Image 1 (cartoon, rainbow, N blue to C red):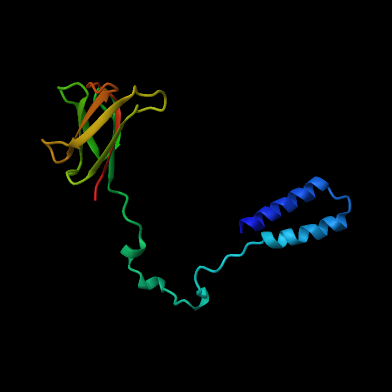
Image 2 (tube, rainbow, N blue to C red):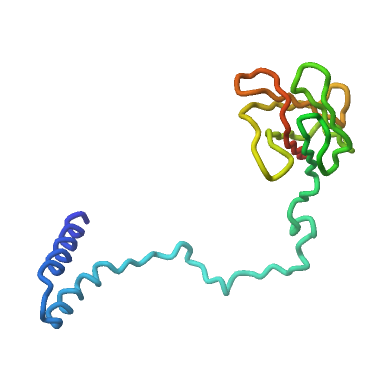
Length: 169
């Protein structure tokens, strides 16, 4: 195979370098090249789609055909002072006294079996937060709450605004 490719490349290069003035000769030389460069794929399946049994739309149950519900996501956007800027399902947010950078967000339902994802970020569309870290855990004092801790780049506690998403089953 490598020999064939090398031969083809040499032939193409030769034709290009010679810049054959006679178009009839050039056409004769190009024909074998085109024949070798034609690729064909074998069919993946030996099945005629016209012979496959059809699935009646009425045979599918609504739950099987419908996508999984996405309405179980809750979120909160919290300012560095602990105030709730906006959210879905978020009832309240506040700074926790100690240590610095500690917050709680309370939702309108039990979030104990949910997944928590957070990132530092401003509530608006201008500017950025300083580099830092964020961690989340269910709130020990409330099944509807999430505890959030924010830090600076050195790992020291620091008040930072954040976005929190809570995905529930």
